Length: 256
Ligand code: ATP
Image (cartoon, rainbow, N blue to C red; front, side, top):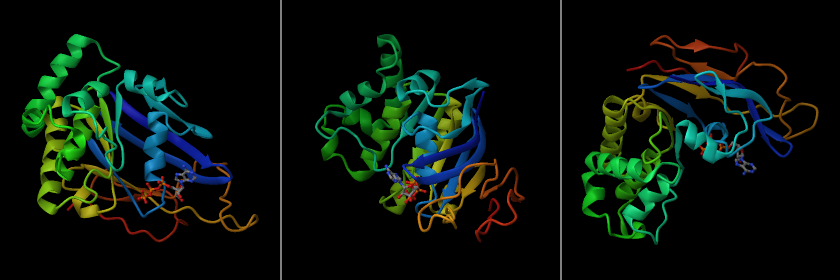
């Protein structure tokens, strides 16, 4: 099963932030989406999840066109989001948070998936009746990942899951992501700013670069998304390929 993004463009009002993003991820594979602040990494995964409407391009799940569909349809199709900043329901218990994540699945599936999530994160099982807001930062991140897993996804989109966590906790989050891939066969896109951290779990990366400012309209007016040209660097294997020679100066880093 393949999740593919083809020539994806998106704008907030007048300002275009995605200028033809291309990426592909297979089930059972994690890729890292890297780039500077504001490069459009979150926008890319929000567009895949149906939370931002693309202005052009396509999102395909095994050839099925999901472009512009609502988020609950993306969830039913097998895509789940771990949002930036976790966004857990702080007044709800751990188990209630997880049940919300399973809302697109049947009762039997939710029970089965709860057991799998508690097996992956025993700490969540121990704290199932504790309210989310009293969990530590690392536990809240595990809950955010667990909640995404509750929809039984084929692909999981993770927006900076290590942000603000201590190095040891980051390591355990990444171990969990690796187990999700190996044991559950799930594919994923991991948004990260730290290249070294991302490549401890990701097999490949796509680097998104900052948008150029439009020349005619002044500051903030991006170039229209006319062509599938991407200011993007990909690493299909260890040798990185630059897809637009005239892009801004970002340095590809191969897998260590
Ligand atoms: P970061 O690493 O800082 O999270 P990012 O690569 O994920 O950045 P995005 O969050 O996708 O980048 O933002 C891309 C651009 O779009 C930024 O310039 C941002 O200010 C702008 N942007 C993001 N969300 C909105 C919004 N809801 N309305 C208007 N502009 C937005």
